[in-house]
Image 1 (cartoon, protein in one colour):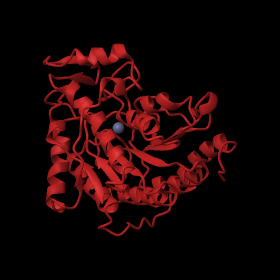
Image 2: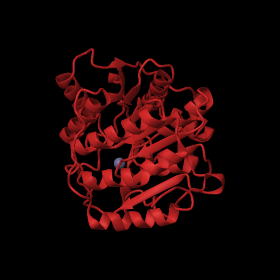
Image 3: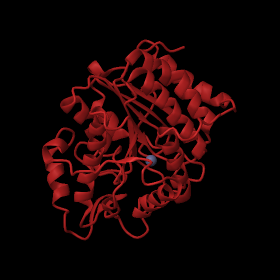
Image 4: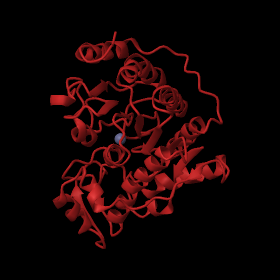
Length: 343
Ligand SMILES: [Zn+2]
């Protein structure tokens, strides 16, 4: 059974009438799910708010208090792209806690895999500041939750959002128990994610960045998964796979130059399902990050859920990758060869 975190309270956070990271994103997803699936297709996982001590696993207390002080205030501007309304703080706690609950449900065997349809997103949030529509770093917090509460030793975070997850990388770049793997448009917001960024100290080699020029499609992403991610998974042997599932690499998305289709996201999901089944007892948890073309976002989430729940056959991606993609990935491989069995 596939678990789903789906709750109307995630609509309460809003950053102004014209902001692209809008409650309408989730509304579109909810409507598409209600149209395509029955009420018994998924096990609904009720979210809970994350507790302060959990948030402090990743974030500074002063930052927690800064966000707590926004509660009840109509608008507080945190960075050029990110602001809060009166209910943003409580919604952000529910986002982080919702993802932890999904992780718990997987670890306790209530569901085999899950998708947390939460907002605000999280992968840009740094230790002590909000950034790029993100308040708390939901996926970093969920990884800490699994390490600390469920004694998981090795976690893989795959970040296919079109933007580099700077906050997630910074949370774990000194450590070897969480491997961060990102493909993203580069150069692009937030500016980080060069292939030379591979982690530091005991975490050296456990950060893998695949910076890509615009125009990449389904075949390119799948090629990178097979050529780089697969051998890394085999060598690292993660016990849990977390995914920062951003749908902004979609060809219709206004915030990127990538050209993925909804079937491309389905193919990436199927690939990760296979890897999770082989290496990580099926433990696979996706969390919603970006994705701003409402129809494309909803269609893509449905395509991913069809794979997670096994109701659709795996999509066939037949085209070859672009020659330029192979060249860009050669740089990544050359840098990481000493750490992983890459050819
Ligand atoms: Zn993004």
